[in-house]
Amino acid sequence: MNTQVILNNASLTKTEKIRQLLALGLTRREVADLTGGNYGFVQNVFAKYWPNQVQSKGIFRPSIFNKKFGIEIEAHGVARSKVLAAIRAAGINIEDESYNHTTRGWWKIVSDSSISGDTGFEIVSPILEGEAGLEQLRKVCEALTSVRAKINKSCGTHVHFDAAGMTIGDIKNLMLNYATYENQIDSFLPNSRRGNNNDYCKSLRNDRAKIEAANSISGLATAIGTRYRKINLQSFIRHGSIEFRQHSGTTEFEKIKNWVVFLHNLVDYSKKHRVTDQEANFESLQKFNQEEIYTYLYNRRNDLSA
Image 1 (cartoon, rainbow, N blue to C red):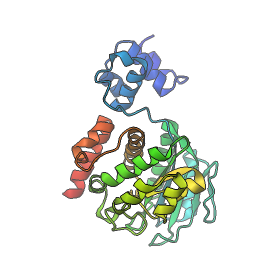
Image 2: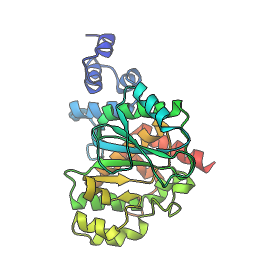
Image 3: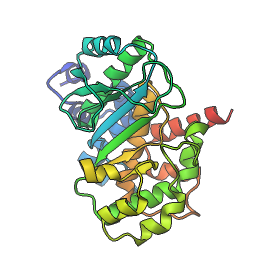
């Protein structure tokens, strides 16, 4: 079997195509260039199938992106009927609904009173999973861009991750690591989402003692109280998920995708690692992110500081 036969085989998953290309003897960089440029994803496949060839086994390596997740995109400035038509034309099942917190098996568009500007709305996904979920997200973002949906400082982008199987220790580590890295995370997000600048995603840094003291997930959610934190645990009680609320509003797929994968990596890293204040500099983000994710974050920080 040659390279083009593998690439053109529609019955193969992306992971299987990468595995077969690597088995042909192609380098990881060559395979990444042939399959969309995601070197980190190729590296993960290589590590899975040829673990004995991976050096530095003690170093954390991000897992393949396969988590269940959900997205909420806030925007305004275009009629909901036009948004619905564009997203449906992209092959995505979406319904117009009144405001609700019910998880559907389809995408929905709902009103959101927190959004300033004309005709504010929120696009809410069903439960998505892995690369297939990101592909749905890409189509929705492209549809929103095509109808020129607007974003302002009142808009946010919220990400939910399935918390099934996470222990109180996992979640405490995650929240403490996020709080410890908060200054670095702030640096690659707009000023309107930093520190305590936004009432809908307040800082976690002053909550660290409460987090440390909690001995159950429900107790931790109660100790934090409001859902308006950069990490919201009220969603765990309601949906069994952890919500990340800090990202600014955007309809740009690359921004959301890189944020989602960064959070995925942080969730995985936090299962076995707790970061100290001394460790938490920007460069240390390389320890648990793929090269392309770190490069994106680095460039985004530089763009926002210019």
